[in-house]
Length: 366
Figure 1 (tube, helix red, strand yellow):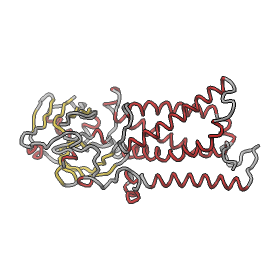
Figure 2: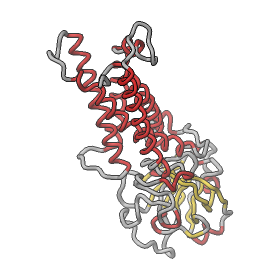
Figure 3: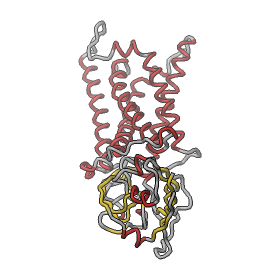
Figure 4: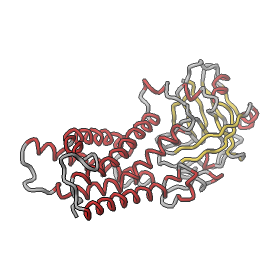
């Protein structure tokens, strides 16, 4: 079969490039929502409420779809990777080096990203900063590769390019079969995993590590109370401390006696799963008002959890003063279970799940 050619590589490369572009843009969006620089932290948007659910769902879905596309692309071009002599000139050496960086970065990103969605980390480095840094290496190497290969890509972009010979009928049929097979593989892995975030397809959620309906109170949990080492909370001694110009403390009964508000918001996890739920609690903006917080003040949220990268969470003014942002006490009409953050947790719109702090004990006006 004459399928290890530029036309096949270009056809697969269009799909792969689109998947990587979507994955990169949504991944950078996710990173800045989780770890905003100081100049951006106070102005992150809290709307649309479903924004993070959409972008992170697309990020994981496009990353999974890119795996069969990358394998097919490498299959189409691998004979060219082993030509002899391996280096013919300085320019050729730089071209091959850029391809090596591109392939290595793509394999690394997709491999580590896939393991991240199942929460398995068999490496000694911190996933988030390394994954973010290599994403920029990948996109830079991809842009360089596109620039170098632009003439070849342009020549083979269309099904029938001027000045090129048509394939024999049997080879053209083989190419169509290959592309249909790759498309079917992409569709299969997408349909059997995307239901973890796109709940209308949850019945097809066969290969995803999470099902949106499985978990206490009908909502999945990534980090349990036991994993966070939060023991049974003594309600009689628990207090919510609000530190501000006029600091105060509230017992759980006093917190329940404040005006309660109901919202429907999704929990959207960085691993790709998400689901909307019904939450009841006190608006964070009302708690800040009781502390005489300035209109543009943010808030630092502190958990009972003793360890963990997200034990302390800073919330900018856009989130803190959004009427949908609650210190939630109930989930789907029931008191929060320990794994969902009893006695109180944060729920806010357009917010990564790791920043929806559970087991809240303290709010500090910033």
